[in-house]
Image 1 (tube, helix red, strand yellow):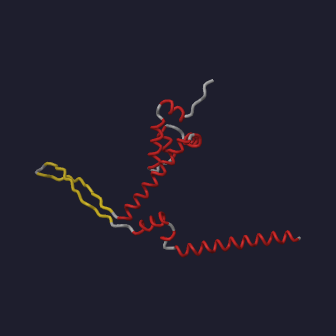
Image 2 (cartoon, rainbow, N blue to C red):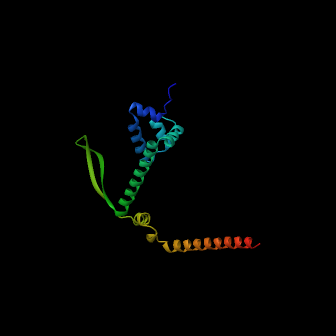
Length: 165
């Protein structure tokens, strides 16, 4: 009896696999839901999950898409943090001697650097030393460490008491 092929294996046999994997990567990079991804590639969401669990290449397409999404978001935050210019194009219809005439108006818009975006990137990329609440975070971390030491000491005392009995 012939083995029943899953969707991944059928796509591979039909030469469609690379295209399906590329579609998955692109949709994940655009933050599309798994439900919609499944619909686009023609399977159920449950089958999609099974394929992710069973086939490494399928799971890798999701991971690659997520990395692309992350890179795109960080790029957008970087652009906002540094400030940028953008050409805005508007099409207007004007009446010229009784005839409609299309007029294209181009303007350069300047977006100044965003301090909050810059702070966020500094914290994410270079750590706590750029966080404005660094001192508070250090203090909380010390308190947690001290509590763990107290708890460990209490456990050791308890064990010593039990061994003496």
